[in-house]
Length: 109
Image (cartoon, rainbow, N blue to C red; front, side, top):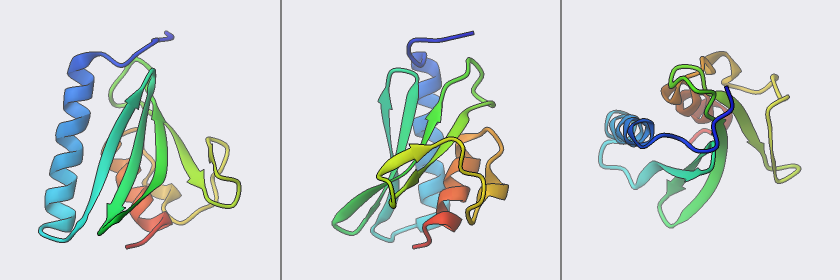
């Protein structure tokens, strides 16, 4: 099933997951994940103090437990769904939380 945009209730769930991950992982640090939505994609950026950078892109597959994952590659300045050999690839499990855990290993704080 191809979806042109992410349903509102799924966006709400993503934002809740990101907020909870930030609270449990970073606490009061000046570090957080930020979700941006565009069409079928959720872009997860990480803000650290005053800088922000891309970490990964998730593509909505129609199910909120089966996101397609693409890591941001700084070497090419692009998202790659074909990259499987990076620290944290074992965390990719189709969930938003798994994507954030993978991002923490791929791009440690």
